Length: 269
Ligand SMILES: [Zn+2]
Image (cartoon, rainbow, N blue to C red; front, side, top):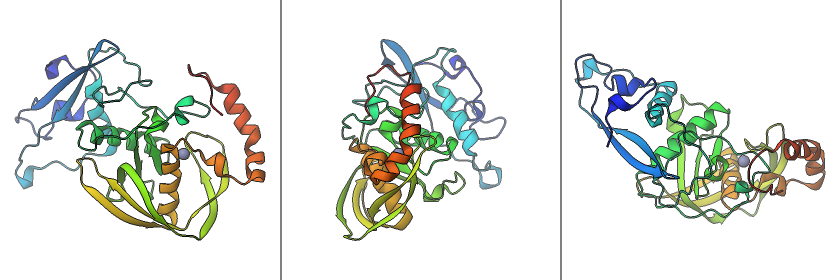
């Protein structure tokens, strides 16, 4: 257990979670765990009731981003990737998009306990990474977490947060015979776009963070995003599904990505 005074760095929430002077600003529960033998601390704000007239405006995503700075403890730096997430207790401080040909994009992804309290927090951080890179979808292996978790927002706009979808352990239970071809890009493949054939619609079952089961029929753009991210959970990348001539067009940039790869693991093409 640590106290807020030990947490360094700016935090809109930490300094003043209610937006009001005079109310307790340190109403913050800190948890701790460990990563590679070092302590890792992360915080969770308690909800408190504030009279309607005194309620602050909904914090922006930038402000929510500052909330994550609770993870910065005494200025120490923790490596963000290569974390064994089994149990999901050991949260990386920051998430970064893993680029092709990083082997984590091809690794097997394990099922997640949707009721684990860290799932929601990881999903929120994945949204932040996704919006920062102007994406519409992100799968956990793309941030180095080899778990079956994905987030997407078909609008790509953080302001349209009601369109955000988080899926834990998603499964395709039915799909259309008809397929449609359209252009796709991927945050793990900067500079590459190509036409990919996808089912026109898919029926999906998944869990929300917290354990509620959801059943959805996805169509059109949303079905395409889902199938792209779902493929990531099976270690399948969109270049695998490109038509041969599309793939050939992308080969030059793919070679550049391979040449620029500076990760620790053995590249997996
Ligand atoms: Zn992708």
